[in-house]
Image 1 (cartoon, rainbow, N blue to C red):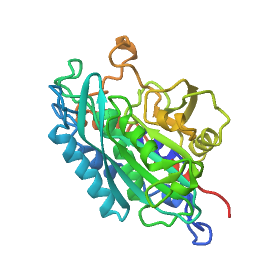
Image 2 (cartoon, rainbow, N blue to C red):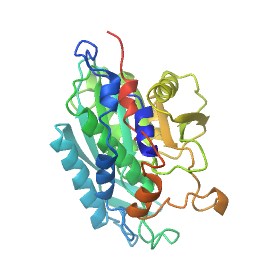
Image 3 (cartoon, rainbow, N blue to C red):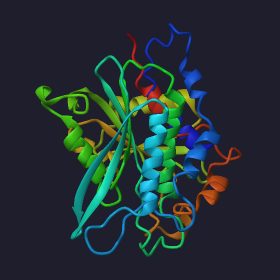
Image 4 (cartoon, helix red, strand yellow):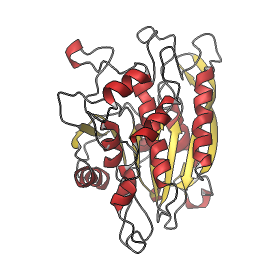
Length: 333
């Protein structure tokens, strides 16, 4: 399962005293389930004609019904797993229109060290009226695959105690310009120690942010592969090297590094001086502009096709972005 390998490569397991408890990283890695991941994906409204986007008429533009149903599903799933869960509402203006009814969903598993690791995936999709995806499924891979990944991460780690705080965030408004991640950075983080509280975190304590954006597709003609992308050249950063190491140690996933990746929710974190990275399928393509031979044929397709063609155990093994992020946060006492 390509998605499962990617999850494992994210490396974020900051379990407190794992060795003392007789628990290994591999034990937690083994919690990842293809069936569970697929169930999360199916419940994110990813069939033909579904959309988690916004209305495309006069202002204010508001979320479509399936957007809000997906929001509630994500929130309730995190909450049922015992995470401290918040809805963070916001509005924004984009391309001459106002957008209202937007919400980030923030799930927190608090640790004891004061350090924080963030894994995020946007749950909004392109709008149903967007001509190049009308009649297919805006959002099956982009980015229900990533959201299902962080939900599966939450399920796998729900019963463990961690040294560092882990935050799993489903961002809204990414397709319009990363407005959900901008809102989080501007309103939930600060550079001033005197301004912190239970829901406002010191940026210096955020050790890294991973944006999981499209992890559902792997070209069967290539090796299982995922791109680790940063905004600026930073190949030797702790986050990049930790993810590369986790990928090599716990999966058979090939990782490749590149930079000048600015089109995902890691960008506002980078702008704020927080180390951040994009994890994206290595066979990603520009579905509007790439020639046919480079196109992922399942980019905006119904979930039944996506799962049968790309999340099949016959063609993939061990992937689900967000999961290896748990490996990433382990630190010796």
